[in-house]
Image 1 (spheres, rainbow, N blue to C red):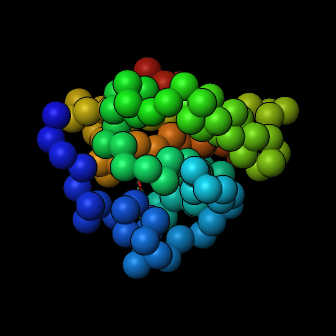
Image 2 (tube, helix red, strand yellow; image 1 turned 30 degrees about the vertical axis):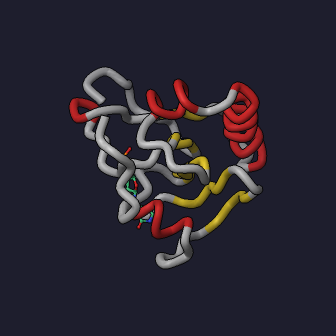
Length: 120
Ligand code: 5GP
């Protein structure tokens, strides 16, 4: 696997070189609004450590950090008031997924009736 690109846009956001609209932050995680939202609520949740992808995160991160990450994704969805009506989680992984930013992130998408995922 290629090394982590320190110049990817989310690395710059973490270093505060690029601004973002933060919705949640702790010592391990940052969540912020997507700059090109595809729904009324579109938030990206990223670990602060340098993981390239979901596969990288799930193989190298500690079990504690993985549990904390996914519990936090769930909590953020709750805080954004998405739990009742529902929402979608997306973690694009690899070139065929259309993944653009090589820092692991989960999209939380909701706030409207979402389209069918086929052909997504
Ligand atoms: P991917 O295709 O890698 O899963 O999604 C990357 C996401 O990052 C896209 O939805 C894109 O709109 C978002 N994004 C790209 N650059 C920036 C940025 O500078 N700020 C924010 N907040 N989001 C960004």
